[in-house]
Image (tube, rainbow, N blue to C red; front, side, top):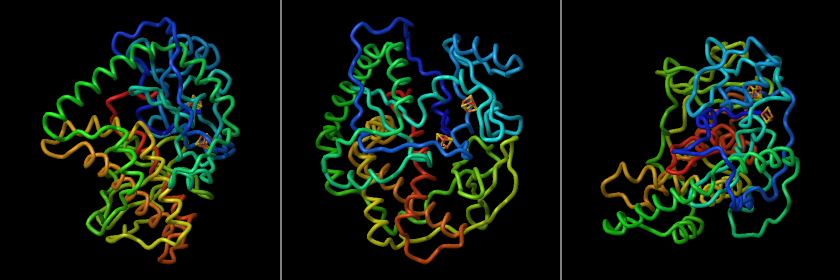
Amino acid sequence: MSGPDVKRSQPPRGPGSPASPSPALPELDLSLLEGIRFGCLPNCGLCCFATPAVSQEEQVELLRTIPKLELLPGSNGYSQVASRAEGGACQLLKGSRCQAYTCRPFPCTEYPIMVHIGSRAQASVCLSCPGISLDHLEDFATSNARRAEPKGLEQELDRVAREFARFPVQNWLRVHQRQEEALRRRLEREDRWESPEDLRSRLQEELPFPEADDFPANPPPPKEEGLESLPLFYEEGTGIVALSDHPRGWEVLSIRESGGIGSSLSVLVPPDRPPRLDASGERLLRGYLGLIVQRDQLLWSAYAEVGNHEEATLGEVAEEIVREAATQVLTRAVIRAQLRGTSAGVLSREDVARGIRATDSDLLDLPTLGRVL
Ligand code: SF4
Ligand code: SF4
């Protein structure tokens, strides 16, 4: 199935990319998948609130199955499956099921896996998918070896491996290595560079936790900006819900599979200071931040962002991204606890897990100097 984030709806092609497979396929780093367990939830459908990219070959098959399918023009020979008229779910979603499951396009078959290609290719999973267990996360708070094979992702991994072989990954890697080298030279001259290894180990040692000044968190966009811009998550017992800015706080909206906003579920006040966590909640948050630090997406998002600053160092920019993510996790955890009527003043592991689910796809959607398959 496909994911809710915008980037996955873009054609996964790059500058001057030929269609022929790469002669020597580079290694795909799978270490972030160790210890993961996955099982799709039958009535979820969260990842189908998207407009997945469709290759020309996939188009032929899809149109044979659903002749009336509306495809939007894309670039590089790709098109996109249109969403419902009022925004929201892919038009092929019905009763939380894909109407073209056997020929759904690549972004849908690889989900919840995503591959980031910077100076190497690294696979990760989107933790907004509620079918991914979060038990493996605590290991990322330390340098504990994980080494357990992922379970339940066999088909998705198989599809990623086949698709990976179709793209000119070697070319992309070379382009990104040159970009990284040019950025390094420039930031070194300006005394703003830190090597990826040093940056990772420094942040891992001292995970950037949010401080009082970081609250209240940046609000989500207002609903007037359109459903596509709002953070979405799956709320057990309710279905897909969105967060939007509101004059009195953050509004929680139910989203209809048939398109558009269903109803306003509540307007809740986000915390204006760091909420308290119990020990298990803090362990899970630390694990999540440790995972973020290990994701290439963080580093390459910092590469993309540092160009917008004149004085901030690469390390400061990366730290800011992690701290902002943690602030959003805690704020969304509080909002979800209030929504469920379980807010007890101290966030538990389950609360933090809900905050992570409501945040991770936004984080994976940040602009990157690399690319995401
Ligand atoms: S559990 Fe995950 S893969 Fe399954 S429908 Fe939900 S988001 Fe998609
Ligand atoms: S094509 Fe099918 S699997 Fe993909 S987003 Fe649409 S409904 Fe979901």
